[in-house]
Amino acid sequence: MVLEIVNYGSPVLRQKGVRIESVTPEIKQLIADMLETMEANHGVGLAAQQIGVAKQLAVIDVRGATDRPSWLERDGKPAEVVKFMPLVLINPEVTPVGETVKGSEGCLSFPEIYAEISRPESVDVKALDAKGKPLAFRCGGLLARAVQHETDHLNGLLFIDRMDKKTKAELQPELDDLQAATKKALGKK
Ligand code: ZN
Image 1 (tube, helix red, strand yellow):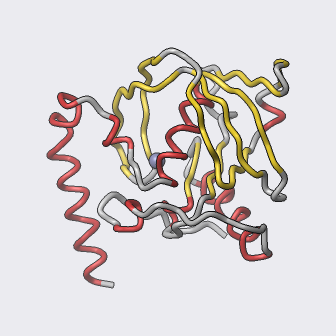
Image 2 (cartoon, helix red, strand yellow; image 1 turned 180 degrees about the vertical axis):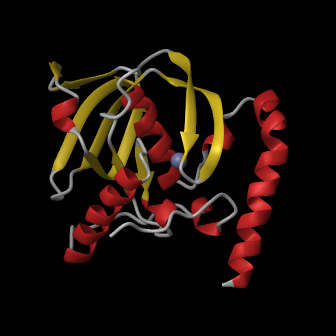
């Protein structure tokens, strides 16, 4: 089922996700719905907070972004990114390993808003997979950016928190409008 994505201004986007202790049938359904929702919205990633659930769960799929390369290593050996997609991350822990690089980012909770964000080029990731099994890998490029963006969501952080002051100041009128529209819509529910 395609779920409704909440926009900036929804309090749930600022909530830290609760850790998932076991992959219950409810969590499996949530994963399936989040994958469907990400695909329907042509997203590169989606965090549970974005569909209104504050849990440590995110999905990622970089296959649609053919112009922005990603790389992946498992057990120190190069692996095929495409075969690793879509990626489900439960309780992810991310450690930066690369130099900081700038790259364009958007977010399904901030329609039409894009900005250059500085983040480490590559990261080590430890998480549980969709079956609750431990998963470890190193990645870089767009995949590393997506992993960091989604892990931020799981901790109640948003890409506007990573913007430099000038960029955020330029976008502030749009951000204020979006936040006001979201709060107005929430008030009517
Ligand atoms: Zn986002």
